[in-house]
Length: 232
Image (tube, rainbow, N blue to C red):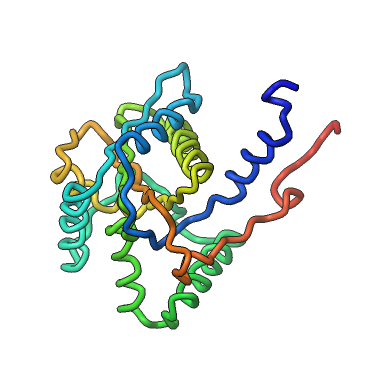
């Protein structure tokens, strides 16, 4: 039996995909440079248009990660806002996306004991994004701004590879679009060229299994609700 037809191998891949979810509190357990590099190497197996490989990653730990967190939090706490360099969400929320968005927010804040209208509590939780939720490693993803919108698909596949490879090794992740809200602070802190778009961040490490927020697993629509089958 070849490896590609090995049921155990298929099960392992399926479990890594199905087991991945956004983790919002991590243990203070360090990761080696070799571990992070191996995940990024697997990430780079992702396809890209004409093999352009548009992704670039800044992997941070220790003081380097803390310095970035503090630089962003200083602006965030002072109410200083920057402009994201691309549209991520719709300008007007409509159904069914509005209900999905509200639903996951209600569940998360409920697990954390943050009641509706508790703006300070919500702000504190948002601020934890910029600490990478205490993960030992923070990743910042960028790509050259000369690329077209299609390259966002390529960098997305790259990131998905990283997340699945991490899960297969007992690690967890959380992708964080909030980092794209502070491109200037990130560029200044990390010495990133103006030619690069700050796409997002990602927390990487070992999940704190005792944290209530890590019990949240957002639901998914049934296949028949988003797929159209013809000719089967």
